[in-house]
Length: 41
Image (cartoon, rainbow, N blue to C red; front, side, top):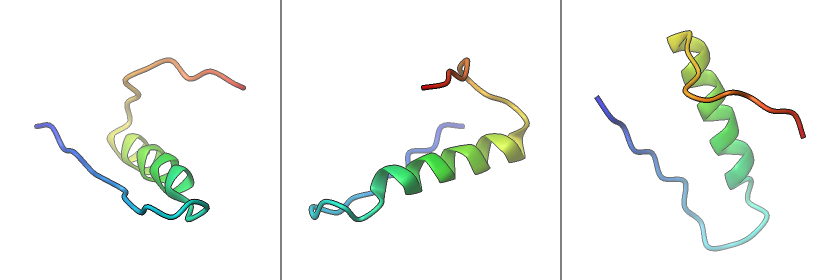
């Protein structure tokens, strides 16, 4: 089952990217799987 989650706010600096990354990490931690190879920056 595919889920689409949208984080939207027109104003900059509201933490959209941080929120999205945290949601992704929590989801994949609970599912015990990662759909991609993690890379370090």
